[in-house]
Length: 470
Image 1 (cartoon, helix red, strand yellow):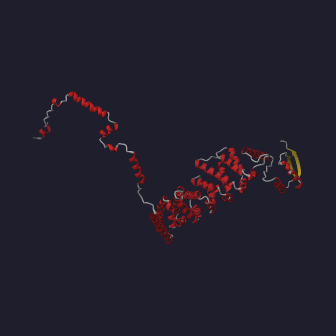
Image 2 (image 1 turned 60 degrees about the vertical axis):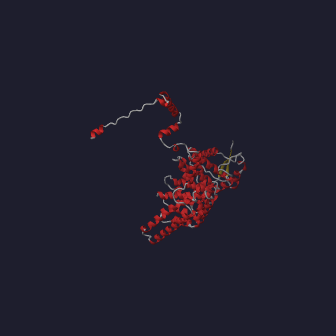
Image 3 (image 1 turned 90 degrees about the vertical axis):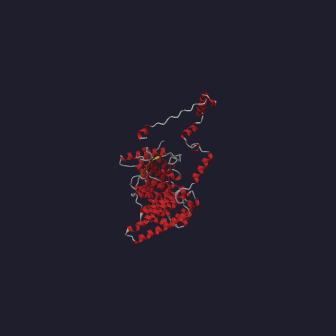
């Protein structure tokens, strides 16, 4: 058979077998069965029909039982994650490697002080192990082991490292180790770590780091932010740290940082927040702030917001922090005199008149300045009332300002003297060479003390009397 015959070949069709009527099934019975089968398939659940059409195993698509679900969740929760397990042996290994690399770097720097290429490799290794030690923060229960291995003193020593990158790495590590959320996971570990840090004068070392870091470099600016975060963590866990930190120079640094004439940034916001924390419940720090001219610094920083609103939410938060600092400082009595001499009352009054966002803060400051028995010196005496509201005080200041403007047109001016008349006026009589005193007869209780008549007798001053009718 050639190719053409092969292609044209067609097999002989088989003859269909005729149905035998002897089987007992006629054509009507056959149609009835087919119809019954179709009806049964239509009544099957939709899920089973889909499974039959998809030809997939039934178990893979049927919903799992509640027991199977619990088993899967239990397996997922107990499954070990990939990576190194942090246990005592792991921390001991890290401590040993850290000590070796720190010692190696110190030796290389001493041996080749003028050749950075010789000790650069050792500093890269030291930076790497410091980064790996961040894993220790995940197991605060083992902080006591970290203290036993004398790692904390070695870490704090690196805060003064010649390479600021190493110092910043240590600061990052300490910030994570002292995170408040982590410290609360293990009270014993937290107490051990913080006690050791305080014994090693961590506050003084951190302030020294703040002094040497250059905020124009981004990494070092982040180091300043993390340093302030460490201080915040310590003060939140141990409030008594506020006094120690202020004594170590932190208060002075914060005031200088606020006075820097640079654009607003996150570090300035953080500095205002830390200052507010230091002054919140510590009267010693409040007095120290006044001695460092901190009242004038706060007033100078707030003066900008007299006619300007903060540009961002963060800047508004800083402004509120400064108002809180001023309120806390005014709780120390000597600072109220500094507040008055720094024209704080005039500034607060101008803020009230301008009706900017600083208005609420100025009201709060005035309330602190005039509260308590010592606050009476901050506002004039009103008969029959020991408390003066803000509206009365604002009205009085506006009247005095108007009187002063009128007197200046006559080549004079208004002098407002603080103190009791019996003490203040005789001194002024001698200083100014006063020869006559003009006053109004005041029927109020304060005027009935007849102080002015006494001045005329003692100081030999001629009196001009006029009756004041109210």
